[in-house]
Amino acid sequence: MIPRPTTDPRSLSRRLRVGALACALALAALAAVSAHTVRGLQSNALATAFVSSPSAGGDPLIALLWRNGTTTLDTGLRVACFYVANTSPERADRPGWPRVTAVGFELPGSPEGFALVEPLNGDWEVVENVAAALPGHDAVTLDVAIRARINPTGRTPGQPRSPRGIPPGQTPQRGNGTRFCLSGPFPDKVPNLSTDDPDDMLTTTVEVLLNGVVVGFHGVDDGEDGIDAGIWVPTPPATRPVPMYP
Image 1 (tube, rainbow, N blue to C red):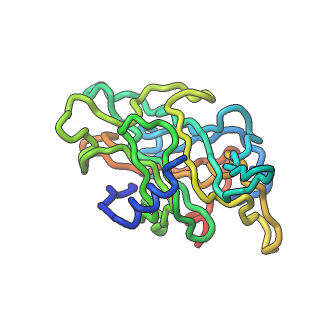
Image 2: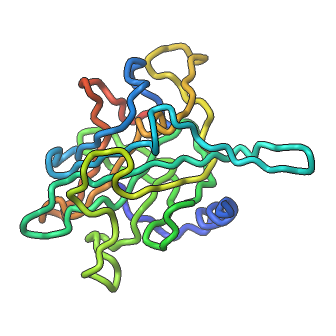
């Protein structure tokens, strides 16, 4: 599970600087996928999500440009928009649960300076350089994660009857769920992990970024607050390296 954030003035400063306004595949044959089914590593039938780009498998990241007179400058920042649907079955004993409470990414290098562009309702926040425990795998560091503002049990502080996060029972279709847009120094290219050639790179489309997605769940069951973490399950079955960039 992606742990809860702690207050970090440096992280806050980075978010404020950028607030004005990734991943590679393990196998080259999987580079053209157009959406991602995510399954929990402990409860793969009870904690599921569907993560997709807005329109198609080739959706590019959006470059943020700065115009200075007649000159257009590239800021080096990119915006990635994607949807997260919580396809988990709703619990009969606890309506409205489990909930998707986090989504994060591992990126090459150690980029910093990400900001949430959408949604801006205060229910979600961005954290950087987050250690994520993935059952059955080595721990990974997520360069950026979007987290619901919740307490350790997955509930909204002071509003236990108004849970944050994405509710269950959503259908696995493009455009379903919650739309997120994240700005930051996303790389334009990432290593092609299917080869040993360091010069073999993949263009970073939204779907390539989503190959390394990690989704956090709360309320999957009654054990330890029902916390689980899920990663993309390729179809046909293939190895998704964890960590993506050791």
